[in-house]
Image 1 (cartoon, rainbow, N blue to C red):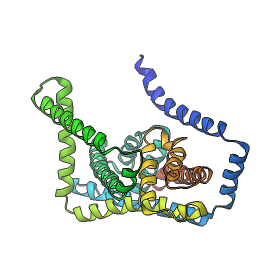
Image 2: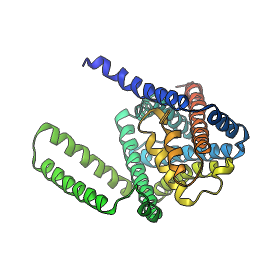
Image 3: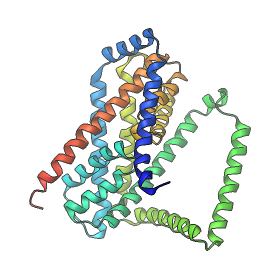
Image 4: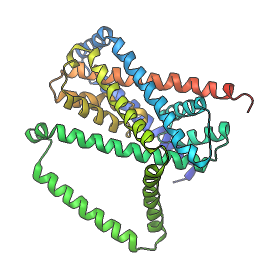
Length: 318
């Protein structure tokens, strides 16, 4: 395939998939289903949604402030406003092209703070390693708090899971041994990548403000979970969800973000499916998913768009 066509396709296909899933979702709703979902939207308590957005902004501010702890040791003292706005621009770009936000963030900070792109990207990668660790931790918590539920459901088969984990462990060990012994170009690239991840983890532990960095990392993800949690009070059908349902819904919703741009068409369906496991009626569960996704997306569009416009204005002299 022509390389010139690959990048546009990688941008268009996730969006097209999201639009198709939305159409597919709407086409399967009966008239009464649509009326129930619209009623949920009309009667929802949006003060809880606004609180969720406020918590989201706090997480973004914390992410921007945390970035300072990575940039200061390498000799850069960027303005806090530039850090905040470039982080918000990154979220906006990710809605259009998945994972391109990191490149946009590094490019923007180069333009307005003269920080080399490669150094900025290095700090962003180290941040992402910390975020992946937090996601894995939350996944572990989700499994632990829901063990009884999973054991009683058809979603979990202990013997099958044990076999899967064993096979995964064996494959992982064999993969590492092969990579370590091989001198092929692809193996060397993988080895360099894995060593880079390890070095990123070490840099976090060695940094001067590591405890502040760890605090903000935990705070960011706590805000993410709370964003999801407070919106459950917006609808009467989701008000009394147990802690396990909150964690499972949050994890499932977060994982759906990787399928399409910002979870377009996927996030509401995945979250609704998770809540349905806890006895929430299908239509209110779908309404909750759509309210949650719409609020998050609008927040990114509004604040990301404003940041894109304000960056050149506040840096007019540069």
